[in-house]
Image (tube, rainbow, N blue to C red; front, side, top):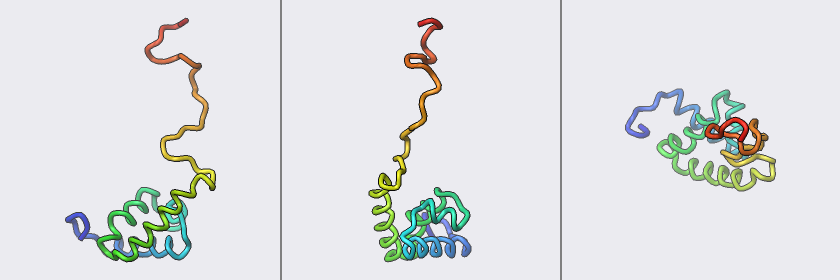
Length: 102
């Protein structure tokens, strides 16, 4: 039981398979999500919330890899969440509160 709710067997199986994949391949959340055909959010929830209730030792191993991946993501060219590299669609100073011609 995780978070007070029983966990279906197929979810437990996926959580453990994803965790083992991450450890064995030193994989990123994105890579694991692609292999298991689930979202990055699902992988993250599986290994950070569900896994500790199933296998604490494996959860610690996965956490180490996730921490390394986070520290190295700039080397892979990944941007931190919330960083927008696209140019703005609006000219400088144009906003919803500006009057036309300002």
